[in-house]
Length: 346
Image (tube, rainbow, N blue to C red):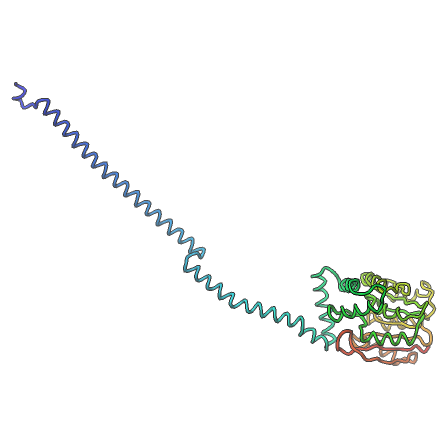
């Protein structure tokens, strides 16, 4: 029993102590583990919270940059609403003003001002319509004739062109008002041979040719090939192509060749409706070439608007002519214009 005296615990007690110590250690480890786990878990939760805050802050800053915050969105919506409230009436008012200018103010103004009429119709409106439609004014006039005029009826073609020029698109024809003066003078002269300088779309050619006596013919000169192409179709649609010879080229080159090309000795009637600065040179050229006889009638259009002052001065003061002015208006307007009738005295 000496081992008892030495204070050595019996093996049962030592076993119990070992178990107790291990249990304590395990308990301590467990407690430490729980505490560490709790710390780690809390740390993770804290980090998650920080990341979430950073994410929200970042998202918020991006929204602020892009103007997506509720306050900013509301402010933007209000600004857009105010912008539309301001600009919508301005746009509507602008369209209304433009429509009024186009449909009433400008058409009314050009009715009484010749230069404004020429500027508006020839310089502004015609190029704009050519660009928008992809066609020229003569081509649009031709389509109107082919669509509305009775084929083979010259009077129907004339009426259709007058309606187109008065209500759809102005064109530099002699027009309906001066056209009646032209008709009366052609009927009075009753020419067997007529010369027209400046065919354009063939309107005045149709007016002249339909009044010629049987066997009569009208030679018409046109410098612009595009105009000549349209005029040929208008003349054919009117059914008077047998009475008309349309020649392309400058009048200054063609007049000296009249006798050779067409076998014409003299003309009974000459209608001048081409470039206004060519009226006087071509009248003198007709004299020099012996194409005017005693009693030949020269009728000049647009002698007031745009005007041909040099030509008027010549025929009114020359002893070779007896002239009379027929007051009228620029085609399809209220602007003063007229025709000058000059009888060649030899």
